[in-house]
Image (cartoon, rainbow, N blue to C red):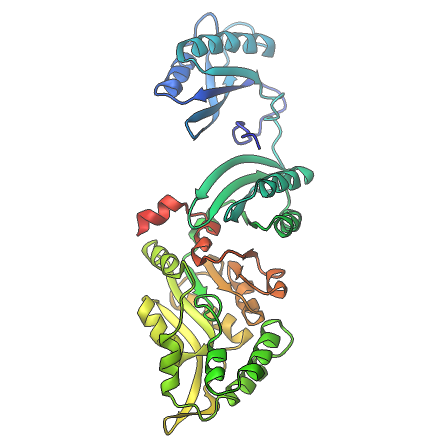
Length: 420
């Protein structure tokens, strides 16, 4: 898809001095930008004085695209009409092109569509994949155009462990945009997230991670059940609970009851065998160095999660506690159950403890018991989640790397490396 060099839209009054878009393109080299603006800064009889209204520049693999919107300043004598203004800038463009070897074009700002301000707030559309297929970019662009929107800018966020691009889109309503792009994601296999442009995106300060099948691979309770010889039974209950088919608290009690009699040492064995999801350490390390409070809220067990939180240097943790008597599990639980509403309460509690508004929090999870937590967070991300969860979360990631969350938050690969 060709890069649109047009700078961000700037509203103008219905009538006034003429404006023009100057586009410079070609192999990047030192001095091009300086040469253009030096020419604009030295009005002559050949062209009137101008003001700079907007500027945008990008270099893609050594190719420069520079867009500048200029407006005629009032001068003594008759007001410059648009035809005269464009003709004068055309002569200036020819001089700059000859001096720099670049292609320099001039057109009316009205003809370039820059005089009309798009309705609605702009959004960031993040495309992620390994790799990102061309049909995902084409599909996203077509979906935006179909909604009457415009892609104002594209930048690459990362090339490892996933490739990701951020599109700045104006003129499209959020719900319609998410719906249209969800269809593109389903068809192409790419992940596509949508976030509103604004300070709130980069003001997030606390992240809560689910544990089983999010922070770590697999389900801890299934591992415990296998050691109790009740794996198939517990797996069926777990699957039904995660898909939203069973009440989580009831299903949890039923699964824990199947663990009765297990030696407490089994908890240590299972904890030591845990495998972190790829990218988990990078995500936590990066966010902590960027000032985030990081923690876990799990429907699992404190005997597993508390040592894990300490190992990873997390700020907080909440989970259920297995009852132990005489060195063995009783099949019961101690204290308040951290279920679906309990996870949301835990997020709100931790945010309050650190003085962080809920709209500045992020929650990541994969199961139906995470939905309340994902919903109350400022940004709820379904990570390799069941369809039931993906459909209701703010956005979804289906990449195998947890640090892809950083790109959804708008951090580039260079920013991640700087934080290491």
